[in-house]
Image: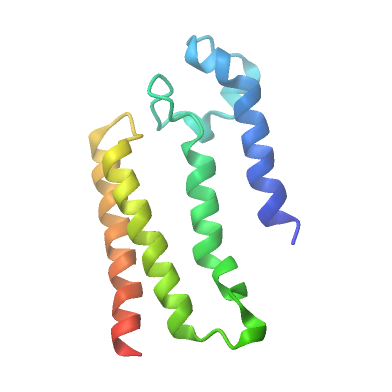
Length: 127
């Protein structure tokens, strides 16, 4: 229960702490240690926090979708539908926001998310 809450909050706190240094391109020791959180994204475009958004999406798709209304008989169909909806929404936001520095990363992330959405959608069709 703690990991899905504390890790995104810790990443967010770290990014808030180093954001001015990263935007000014003065990478200190803390920013250098946290480089895995921001190096692929465009901090000038306001996408320094994109890793936190992506982590929350991954947590929702991997585990939190299981907690969708379990006491009222949430079925696998509802979970697949919400996972498809979240994946589709993220794909649209990813296409319009273009948070990556390199276009190859954007195409790879878009393609991977599109195939993930197709997997969830095919699960809805198969059910």
